[in-house]
Length: 139
Figure 1 (cartoon, rainbow, N blue to C red):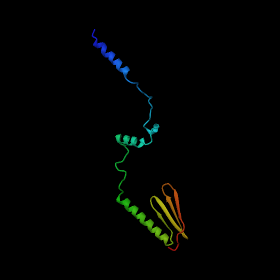
Figure 2 (cartoon, rainbow, N blue to C red):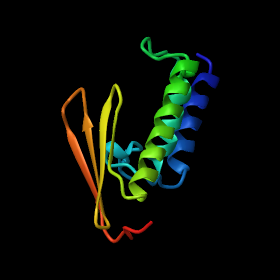
Figure 3 (cartoon, helix red, strand yellow):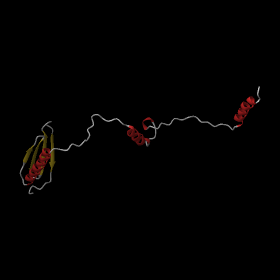
Figure 4 (tube, rainbow, N blue to C red):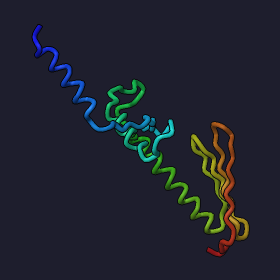
């Protein structure tokens, strides 16, 4: 038998025993995700990482959240705004008034410097009342 085969394993064992002592500590689990006790500062990084990897599209999502109103809708909004302004001007002159639209009924009354605006939602019947006091009735 060849002596080289015995020398190599013996030298390996001698080398292992001649090394210094090995220091080891126990493993401690530290979670990364803040939902499981990790550092709260990791939350933003984890969320951005997840969102950058998300390739799913919402089937109910519209291409654009803003829809351009039609010319008729813009004209109707402009007319309602103008009528409300005129109604407030008339109330400033001492007159009361009312404006009825498809969605709301607006009643404005000035009682000796106390301006009362009653808004009624025609679809639900909900009413809102706004009272502003301290107005000069001579305007």
